[in-house]
Length: 393
Image (cartoon, rainbow, N blue to C red; front, side, top):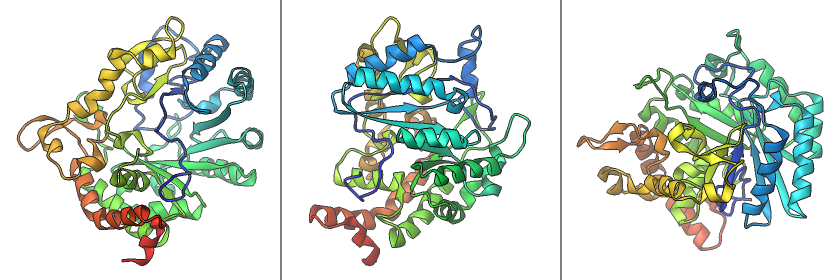
C-alpha cells in the first residue's frame, strides 16, 4: 500500500535492485504504430525464436533472490507480448521461485496487451496471485488509432474481452495508457473510461520518440501533456483521492513530502531498474536497450555485479549531474528531477542541451497542483488523511 494516499502501488521503485524480464524479447502479436521496442530485434539479427531458455530463466531467478535485501521480492514479466510464452513457462518460473525463494514473500506482475487472455490464463493468474498490467489507450476511438494488429486491424474490442475475463475471475489488474498526439485531447473521456471499467490503478505514459533523429508524429505535444494532467487532476482531487490511484499524482505527492516516489522517472537518480533480455543480456533500463548501455550477460556475470557496476552507477547518477542549468534553477526540480533521461532531447532557451521535451507541460502541471500538494503535505505531517483535500478547495 502507498504510505501517502492509501492506494495500491503496483510496482514500487523503492527497491535496492529491480530487473525486469523479457521472456519473449521483441516479439508481439500486435504491431502498434508507436512501439519503440519491436525494433530491438535488430540487436539479434541471427537469432530465431527470441525465447528465454530454461537455463537463463533458472539462472536469473537464483541470482535475483541472491541480490535482494528485502523479504518481499517482486518479479516483473514484460514484453514484447508476454502471453506468447505458454503457461508451462510461467509454471516453471513459479516452481523455481519456490525453490530459490526459501519462504520469502514473492509477488509477480505481468504486462500484456490483453488480446490473448483466456479463461485458463485468468484462472492461472488468480490462483497464483499475479497482478496483471493491461495496455489500453482509453476508449475505442482513442485506443484504435495506434494499437493495431499486424494486418492493421483495430484491437480495442479484443482487449475489452480480456478485461472482462479479468473481472470474471477477480484478477487484480491495472492499466497503462500511452498518451499520444490524439488522445491527449480527450483527458476526461480518457479518465472516465478507466473509471467505467472499474480500474482503480492507472498509469500514464506520454509518448516521446524519435525516428531517424526527428520527433515522431505521434508524440504528445509538451504543453498539451500538462493540460492533460491538469484536467484529470482537477477531477481526481475533488472526487477520487484515496479511491483511484493515479501514479503521477501519488509520486508527485511523494516528492512534495520528501519520500521516494513510486515511479523511477520522478526519482533523483536512475540505475536501480534494469532489464534482462531473453538471452540473458542485461541493460541499464528498458528505455536504453542499446549496445552502449549493455551491462553484460547473466551467463558470465551476476546481476549484482552488473547492476552495481561503475558503469551502471554512472548511468544512474548522470540523471542528476547532467541536468542543464535551467533545470537546476527550476523551482519544481524537486518534483520533476528532470523526468526520464530518454526524453531530454531539446535545448533550453539559452541553447544548452539536455532539456526534457515535456518540460513546459510538467512546469504547467506542477504550478497548478502546488496549492493542493501543499495542503496534502500538511495533512500528512499532521497525521491526517490527505484525502481531506477533497473538502478543502
